Image (cartoon, rainbow over all chains, first blue to last red; front, side):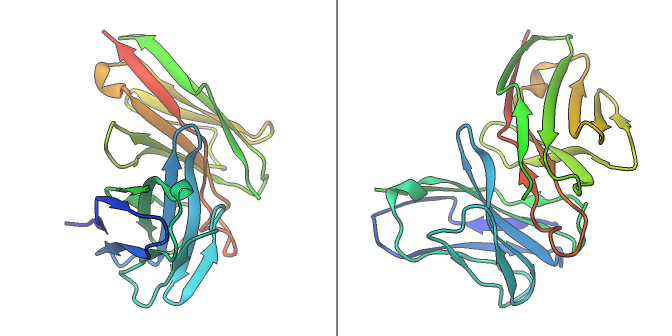
Length: 113
Length: 115
């Protein structure tokens, strides 16, 4: 089944404790992206990647890191999480050209206390 | 960069009535405009999209219109049903190599269909 898989689904952590949210897709998509969803703000892009080893900042990259060492995986790293990073996070993938459907993962609900 | 504004933020309609959500965008280079539906606790899913060479597109009870001159596009849902209750997001994206990754979303519209 074609899908985008994120883990974990729910995470509660403490300020400053490094964490990684994994994202994997099995559709051989070139493009992958991370979004955060906050009430009233919609989906805001954190980082995106157009292919292996090619990443770029989105609109809200501060406090986040990403890597794209393999085509299928695109982990999101929070080196020192803070309470303002409490949010719902979505990973998405799409074929390697613009103007195509983005397939979203099931989401990760992160709470930083 | 692109800025997408979406209105209204909430929309209540009676079952069977129509719902209209409007979005405006700022980047004249944007030429791909998808709409996503997010049911409660679920992931966003594409329901319809339109490209700049088309003024209108329909798929059963949903339709999208695009006015490139005015830089706005709208989602129309006819004969609304309770299962149409969800958050709807519009988005805009320029289809060019240096920026096709930057899909810009609106803030979302919570649609509530009451029986």
